[in-house]
Structure formats: C-alpha cells, structure tokens
View 1: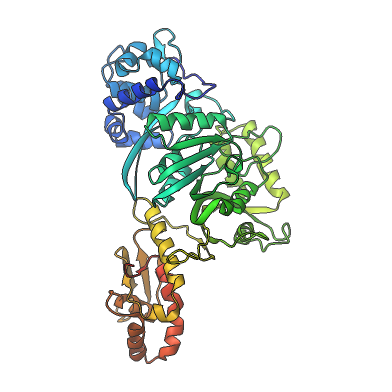
View 2 (view 1 turned 60 degrees about the vertical axis):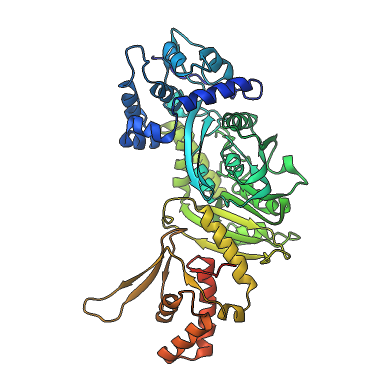
Length: 538
C-alpha cells in the first residue's frame, strides 16, 4: 500500500450516477463512518495531531487494526483511504464498500483505478458534526486532497473542505425559519447545507465550477435536495432576486496581483486589497427582503492616513463607507472585529496555507505580499464578522437602521454556536430601540442566567476595588461596573421596574433621581443589546 494519492482533475460525479451516491451513503452509514467513531478508533491524542495537520499517529493507530492484507476493519480501511488520504488494498476496499464496490467508487470519482492491487484516493471525504440552535447534526463532506496528501502546493482551483473559517461562519448562522436563503461563494457547500436546516429553498453560487460540482455531490451524498447551484461571480447569478437570509464566506484573502503569485479560487476574489469584501457588503442589502439578514466573514485593511486621505486610518470608517454609499438604502450593521495581523504575519499565514513553507519560493511570495501592502500604505489587517439587516418599518418590533462596531478579541463564551446568541441579540436590539425612555423605565429586566459578577478587594478592605460582569456565553463579554451599575444589575430580578430601582438607588446614594436616570438609561440599553439584561418575554 505504498501508492500515493492521485490528483483528480474533476470533482466526484453525482447527478449522473445517483444510484452510486446512494450506495456510498449506505456503506458509510453501515461502517459507522462518523466523528465520534473515528475519534474512538485512533484516540484523542491522535485526533488532536490530525487537527494540527499531522496524520502519522492516526495512521499508526489504524494500521494496528488491519491484518496483513490491509483488511479486517471496515471503518479503519475507510479512515485510512478517505480521511488520512493513504492507499489501501483493493481487497480491503471491496470489503469496506460492499454496496458501492471498487468499480463503483472509481466511476463515482472518489478513488483512482487500482494499480498493483492498491487503490489511492482522489478526494478527501470525512464526517463532520456540529450543534446549532436547531439541534445536533452531521454530514459527510468531500473536498480536494490537501498538500500533505499530494506532496506539493495546492492547485489554484483547489476546493477546500471544512476549515476554521467555515466552522466560524457556520457557528454564527442565525437559524430562523425562512423561505429563501443564499450561500454566496459556496465552496464545498458546507454553508448551503447549514442553511438548508432552516430555509425552504437555498441558492448556492460560486465562480468555480469544480467547487459547485463538489457542493452538488455533498448535497446528494447527504440526501439534501433543497439547494439550487448556480455558476457565476458574486451576485451575478442572482441579479434581481431577494432573499430572507444571505450567508457568505467569500474569497476575502488579500492577495497580490503580481506575476508568480498563485490565485486560489477558494480564497482570492480577484480584486485589489479588500475590494472584494467592499463589493459584497455594498451590494448585499439590495438582495435582502425587508427584515432580511446577511452574515459574512471578511478581512479589511488599516491604512496609513497619509496613504488614504479620505479616512482616519481606522478600518471601521472604511466599512461604514461601504454600507452607506451615496444613494444606498440605510442599513442596520453590526461589525465584530476578532483579530488583527501585521502585514508580514498575514503574508506568512496565507503563503503557508497554499502549501509553500520555506525557501526561495516562500521569500519571493512574501516580498510580493509586502510590496502590495506598501502600495496602499497598509499597516495592519483586521478579520471579523459582519451582520447586516435590511430595515423593515412594518415589522414588530420595527427594524430600523443603526450601527454597532466593536472589537472583541477575547475567546468566545461557552462552547457551542454563536448563532443563538446573535439571534437573541438582534431581536433584543430591535425591541429596545423601539422603546422610548418611559417604556424602558416601566420595564422590569432580569439578569441573563450566564452572567456572573466578580469582585476584587485589597486585603482587609471592606469595599471592592474592581467589580466586573462576566458573560459565560455569547462573546464572553466583560463589563467593568461602577457602584450604581452593579447595584442596578443586582436588583434586576424581573419584579422591579427600572424606574423603581433607580429611585431606590438615588435615595441610597444620595443622588439626584433625574440625573441618575440620565446616566443609567443608556447603560441599560447597552446591557440589553449585549445580552447581559433580558427583556420580558414578548
């Protein structure tokens, strides 16, 4: 079993051989080909090594389960071939895929023709599991073989599987039942599959025909028939159409347009700098129905003010201009920046991502990246999440334009999907904005169950020196508290109105009641928007 994986010029077949797709699905299910079973097969330590891109511990664990012919354990054979991307014996594969058969696997396009009794993979095919606000789920996802398997840098039309950005975005998806959803730049189709869990109809687009073929195969393999696949750039395939929900993990990586720099379709949108992200953001709202939501990931450039005289140097100013261009409909926008990288670190990250590690080739690519950044005066690159909502005056509560720009670099809260938190935050934001000050004063709020308070004292002191609210879920926010804010939040048990609590605090602190209201009302609105305080159930 020494044959190396082959490089497939095409994606697996699906529409032309549906019976073979069904046969593969049956064999994978019968073998128990899942995330938990594979982790049990090779152990937690080996699974962690595989997550870091090292497959040797898993290969050693798998090979211990196989007999001299490479057979004896269906799951181990499929794991070696499809996840670890290593050759297996033809005899072993025939036993592992009794319904599909080896000739069927060749016809389907997931393995190459046997050579010398050995079969090599043409695709990476692995289980994927998740938990979102609708429950537990899982699929099998096919993609191109990575550089570890093929032993060279990636091809420019490489179709990426489920990576860190994919899981980040899927975890952010707001799962509310809708009629129509759009996955812009679908890649292997993972976001379209996630959208299919709450949308009656999904349109998935991509500029890469190979990506669409993989996405179509993945939908068929998992028995999902509510996705329509369309070829084209950005919003071109859906011109004139509107959706309730748009999700996009676009090819946002900032790539030099210099000779010799690979332009990977899965990450390079073909535009200079962060213009691809600008294009998506500036055009998304016109493809949303009133009240519709768009969610995406992106990079944005911070530029030296001398190089970009129209802006302060803060990327948030540039993003504001993208979603508020002249003549554009006002939009409700929420931007969360999660991290920043200096130009050298950014270049190194994406050069390694393409499979070029060291040597003259890596040095030449890094020079190209740094030259490109220098032409625009880029001093750092931000990464984060963007959520847009199209205003809807007749919704209840009405959705009105507004903005929230924030930098949250701390680890997110408790493990699980952020989608539920975002859904709650968007609803709370609409409700609290629709309330005037008198309505807020008349409301009895309650502290969210995941919020705790920390107090720090100097040794021997009676009063705390620092008081902090800590959010256990969501974005894991921390909020430093003044005395009056700590006392207010502590009294929010759902029985006392805001006006009653403020009146009591004014008396205790010997403060002016009207002045305290003026201070507390904006803080209360902020604590509601961030999920620290909960509104009564509507």
